[in-house]
Length: 248
Image (tube, rainbow, N blue to C red; front, side, top):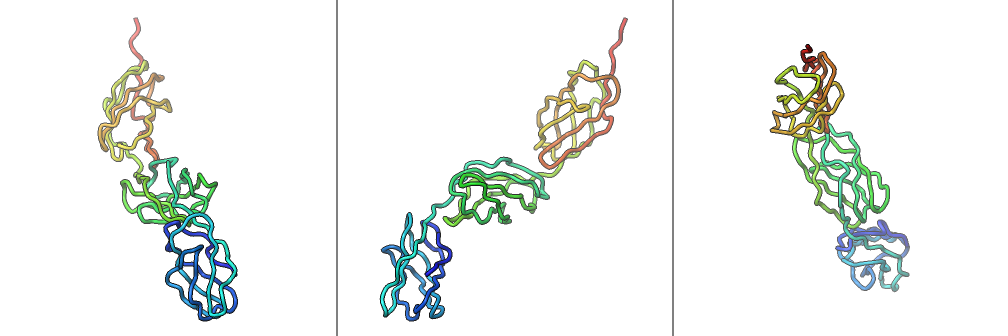
């Protein structure tokens, strides 16, 4: 007498289909010592029932006027616990893969990002990977994981747009570096890095439209300035010029 699914939430509420023979006039379905609810005789070979709350592994039995069936195991699964996301932000277009770690993830069937669901790849009971779906708008959304044991929330993911560079001021400085530069543009508040000719520069986020950075040492001539965030990069080609100091 197989049942499907054969596992469900410790809180109950799992709709289970039981198949077998001589199931007509079923009067009761029990999960261990607890009666199921919403028992429906679909046919002489099929009964549906909603599991009560429980823990561990219990035997499911069906009772008809002819007697009670042999027990078939049903496994109660606790709700998942999520501890971390491998990346807390990413492009509005989605498509990047993140890893969720926690416990009770082995039966995960879906991951929701702000109500938009994606199908995960389960790596182990403590890890799953999922491709982030496209977001509806820039900003944070809640992340929930659904397993046989239920749905758990508690994590947040932020959709971001790629940065754009508008102006750089000043546009030149000594090859020794150390020039304080103000960069204006858009979507700069999630900046991961600023580089001058490929060399990382110390920077601070002032606002979504402004960054401050300090030029690293460089060689004389114009160089590209690149601002990068989790959604991508923008390049201001030849936007800063390193100048050699005078010699006597």
